[in-house]
Image (tube, rainbow, N blue to C red; front, side, top):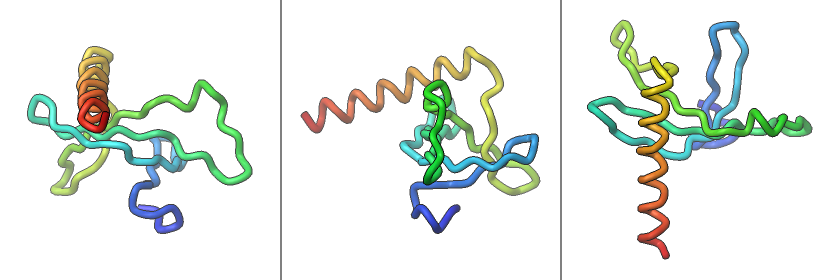
Length: 97
């Protein structure tokens, strides 16, 4: 976790060794798996291209006894989990409204 941003931000490293700051939005359980939704964090003085501002969904998996974040296995899984996050989001908005 990045202490610079606070508790809602994490730093992830991709398979090429590039680091990215992500803002954690929500966590859900779906089909027995934990999924986390993030938005890319903008770095100070750096503009992020609009196409890179989308929702990032990762899943928590156990590897060698340690919990890590992983990309989803298929477009079908991504679509289904995205829909689950949207239902959760809109349900929360209706409760607040």
